[in-house]
Image (cartoon, rainbow, N blue to C red; front, top):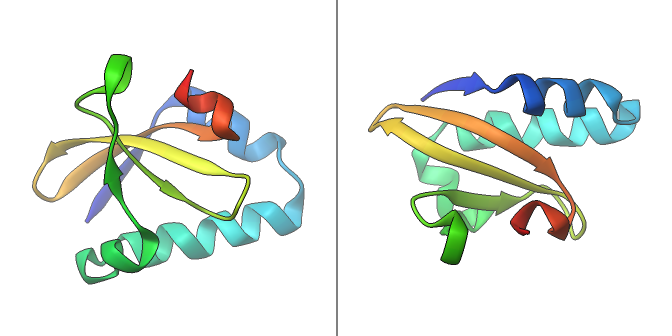
Length: 85
């Protein structure tokens, strides 16, 4: 799976504390293999975020993304539950 990072996503990721960055990178590596999507609880979002998907890094941090093709996604936003607003 090819992952493209939006500028907003990349900027936010760089601003997070190192330990959290490491945890996020681990989850992203898991995400690259579609077989792990069930484990990561990848789910389709609704409302104003329809056509977007999300998964949890931990209990507080979420990643929102969309598919560009079957093998390519763009990570749009990372943050707490406020990313859904």
